[in-house]
Each structure stands twice: as C-alpha cells, then as structure tokens.
Image 1 (cartoon, rainbow, N blue to C red):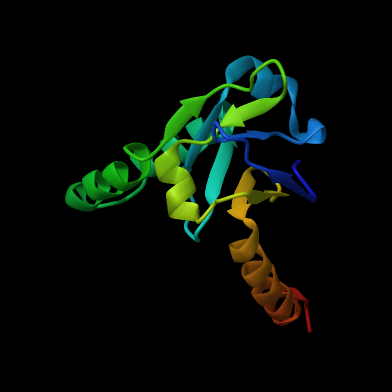
Image 2: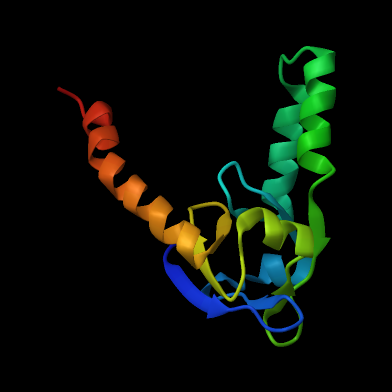
Length: 143
C-alpha cells in the first residue's frame, strides 16, 4: 500500500527520486509503468497493477470501437521504466509537460498506485479533495 506525500526536485535530466518507502522489491525487480493520469498528473503502477488494469480493460463489456479508442488513449501514452541504482526514475518529457511538472514534484501514495504531480497543480488538487472528502465520507456511512 502506498501512502503519504513527498516533495522532490526534478534534476536537469528529468529524473526524480522514488521515496524509499515506495521502493518495493516488486518495483525494483519488475519495473514500473507511467501514464498520464485522469487529472493533470502522472500515474505510476507496478507491473502487476498495470496488468490488472489491462485485463479489466480488455475483458469488459465495451463495444469494440470504444475499446480500440480506450486502448489507444491508455496504452499508447504509457511508458515502461526502471528505478536506477540511486532510486530515481526518468520522467518522459511529454508526461512532464502533460502534468505541468517543472522544478518541484509531489509524489503521492494513493493506495495501489502512485501519482506524480507538479507542485502547483497538487496544491490546488489536494485543497479540492480535502474539501470534498467529508461530503464523500458522509455518503458512505450507514445512516
């Protein structure tokens, strides 16, 4: 389970450190998948989580045309990478641009995957999430 937030700087080669708590044996051995998140962030998956996502997308009751479009949107924009010996990953330029990542990044654990945000975008997003979280929890609690 990935939890917590960590703030780092992007180096001149577009690399960021992965928080030590997130450097699981699975991520180090099998590598990771990066893709544009639904919001303006980069989503990082272990390969096992990525395979679960892929299986769900290819076995669901989706019309073939919509499935092809979904597959293009998700898989053509994904990148496979590894954690280097110093615990860093390289963020592809197109993903950094998509997420508005410049100098500072926030790495957020979000249970089974990790999100990588530009600092400014994260600050705005977490403020919205915290405001809405109470309302969401209220809908989940039994009455």
